[in-house]
Length: 176
Ligand SMILES: [Ca+2]
Image (cartoon, rainbow, N blue to C red; front, side, top):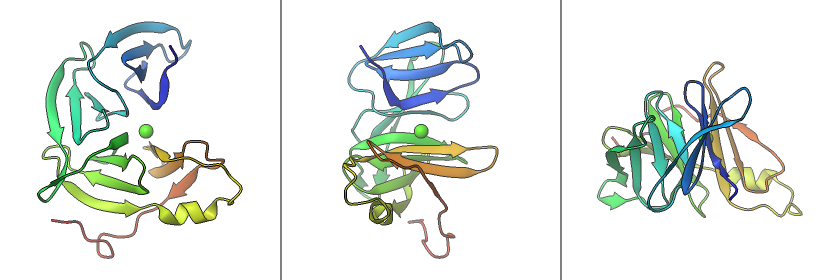
């Protein structure tokens, strides 16, 4: 079984990857040092520094204990009264969960405590920057370089990784 690396994250020292099993690797040697199995699907994986956060293609993000993988909490992601489905790749960025919506060119910014959508980021402009000859697939990669505070996005089969900067809150006010 091959691991789905779109959920690849690092929490303290080990590296985690999902594919119905969650594999844990030692960072330096990439030797497998543990694994968990879980019910349902595992799409995206990130960490708030203490817990693991996993998506499964629904509107629910599960918060897990990193040692036992026990579910501590379910975060129901919603924008007003609407639950936001197809949450895919996750990235924890400065106190928010960012998730792309599978098959759509949008990233949502989510409040981890309440599951409320704080804002939508339109990624359509990136597609125009890729050559029409590129056989690109869906947006599915978000990464945050904490040290330099830089945000990167990419997609399946994309020949490029983009660094993005979001406009100020004043230009794109959140829902709250
Ligand atoms: Ca990520």
